[in-house]
Image (tube, rainbow, N blue to C red; front, top):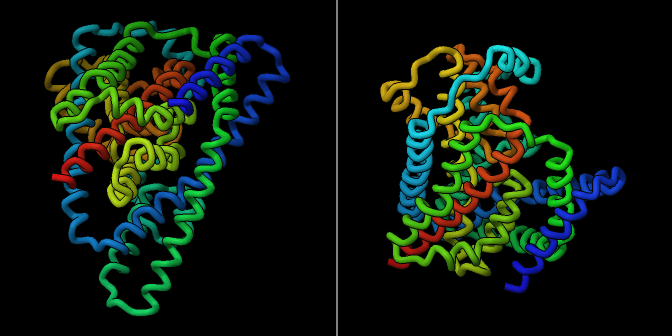
Length: 395
């Protein structure tokens, strides 16, 4: 509770500092925010790899097949629910088309992606053991970690195996020590994140919205966050207010970093030490969820795709919505947990169907706010899935 109060206080202080509009102060806060983001991104890659390797190597892969199945089931259910809420809101609010002149201006701020979605999937398959680490390719790293962890679990017991496993466990202990140090110093980072956002808003970067479209996207996120996910928890016998209160540090961190992968060290530490999720469950489920559990991304892909296609002359009917509902869920599962990942993935999909991607150029100035809320929702959903899987593990 004390830590949460300190974090909220830092949030308020930063917001006030950002409103001053002092150039040197804005630059300093941007620098500090960038430093914190880079440090958490630095720890995120080894956190994912070591968590999966040590869990599988220490406990074997047999029981974790069931846990992975439960994780995947809850992920697909929550992600599908998020996309369905977005589709329902789109039909109810029914955003109109943009003026032709506005679309032409949007084309100046957006470029078609170099990679198709098929190429994006192929990039997940590593052909070099070092490259995924250098690029921070989370899906590739997860595949490598699964292979190494399961391989170690299948090796016969020997001195060589014990040395390797102990080495990985020692590295993981050191990593968690570094994470705890960063979390201890995080109030300064929150001040910087909050000041940076406040300065952008006061400068008018996010003041010009697209009205009903934004209402659909943000409304869907709010409903998923405060209604749908709590209902999932209630159905499994959990108190949503208790779970959210315990996981609030991770949710706030996600809000500002806009990266569920960068937030993973905080999510794991918070889930284990504040929420009480078993270490072997948290360290197995959360890295997977960070990679595939993208509730906010699925809703954004669906709503934005419908909006872009509608502006390109495609009639929005039930026959249009249903296929894209499944496409958005599948695409979100394959998306990387990095800033603007959903935006560029949607850009790839719209380029592939010949829709007017210039519309995404109009969305770009306000995407910062959308991305923040989506990422917070994704990490909250990760926390809910881990909590439910932990309950299944008890049962």
